[in-house]
Amino acid sequence: MSTRDSDKWSLPTDCPVEPKWFYQSEKEKIKFAWFLYEYACAYYNQITDSRNKLVSRWLKGQSELQLADFCAYYSKRVQESLGEFIHGHTNDILCDIGYIQVYCHRNSGQLNTELAFQAQKAMVYLLEICNTCPQQCLDNPSDYCIFFDRYS
Image (cartoon, rainbow, N blue to C red; front, top):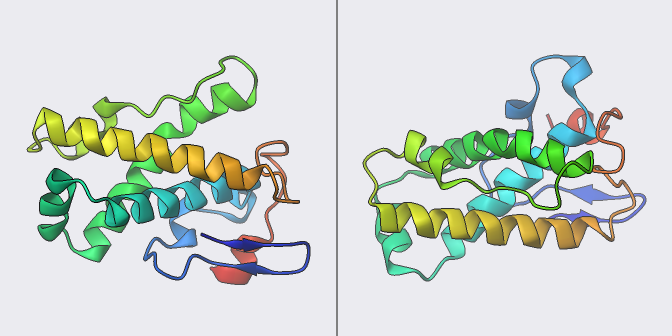
């Protein structure tokens, strides 16, 4: 994923998701939006690295941009559940299969279940990385995020 230390930041190099997809104005360039961007990239990588046969077959019908768009969409849909988690209203982040069904309405239930499982794995992976990040985006979600200025 990303390389983090106090002076350096590098974007995920193998993910076509764009940071600019996560804000519309300067005031929306916040750490929470950056986390959503990072999550979309983590989900993208989780899907493309999956060894599940259903996911592999599904990927063959998706362009990189289509997959990136799906991952950005999914990340934005999870933001409400993530917000509840950040504010301490719940102990869980819901990676809802329903979000996948709305976007990928032609998928089988089994494929959507697997994509939801991949979404959950991506979230766990990202939260583990975030524990060691000095930026602590989820502790200060409304703070301005300079990373958007560096990479957008």
